[in-house]
Length: 311
Ligand code: NAP
Picture 1 (cartoon, helix red, strand yellow):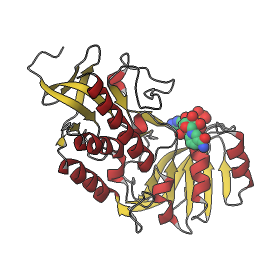
Picture 2: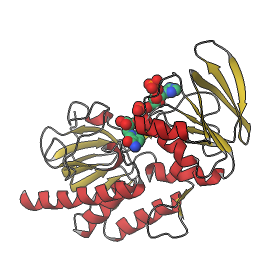
Picture 3: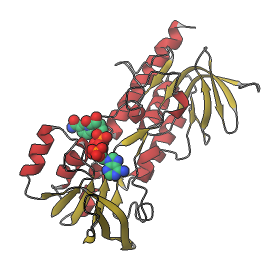
Picture 4: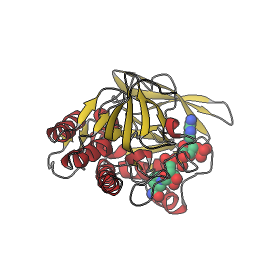
């Protein structure tokens, strides 16, 4: 239970990615002096993206960390407070809502949840070591760096096929490695992939290790039916085996969908009035900087209206 003396805020934003910082910008410009709890990684997934080339306004693209810095500066310019702290406990049963962090305890008249989603990892040797050095979780972000290369994609869902097909714009070949011999992906994507000359499937197979010298060079594969093991040379390993929304704190307090994403209506309203969610924590479909930013702005606009109606 939270029992220390709490600091009261009009709006607390949990998370500092594009959704959180856009929400902060809009809330700050309405003089709410929002508090952003940045989480462990200021900027979220964008902070580990080499370059963002599909966010309008930057014709030459912009490095992920620079975009994060710009988001923060712009939000702070209008009065946003950014704390390098993480929410560890929330109580949404009464308003103002209670938020406990590593360092403090707060009361929030409105809450905007933008805690994002984490790409599911294979958890195999080499995966962490080569992330950003040939291992990627985002074809849209990194595909461009694999011009004329041979890459593998791991997964059999819509993301694996969609991202694998996207990669064919750049790469010489894509081998899609799936642990079964039936795809989870929808029929349209399956047909497109089967028809694409650059795409090949390796069925009933898992990747057990990623090997390289500074950058990815080889993967170890295991056929789950025969037990046969082999090595495959590759320049890149794109992993699309689903995402895990960061919603642990809200379980039992907010309605989540069957995959754990926060359920929101088109006004970013969650099942608790005054609590909004935006970005990938509430969106398993688009997952782009621009769509998250748009959701964040919308959530803040609704929080502003809510505070006007409840003052
Ligand atoms: P997903 O549908 O959960 O598929 C994940 C895939 O990864 C599955 O094929 C699964 O294999 C495989 N997988 C999971 N854990 C693995 C592991 N440890 N090792 C190897 N393989 C593993 O995830 P998603 O493709 O990201 O899609 C998420 C949601 O977004 C879905 O509802 C999807 O329809 C939607 N989406 C839609 C579109 C579109 O409509 N264009 C595009 C992207 C995503 P199994 O099949 O054996 O379980």
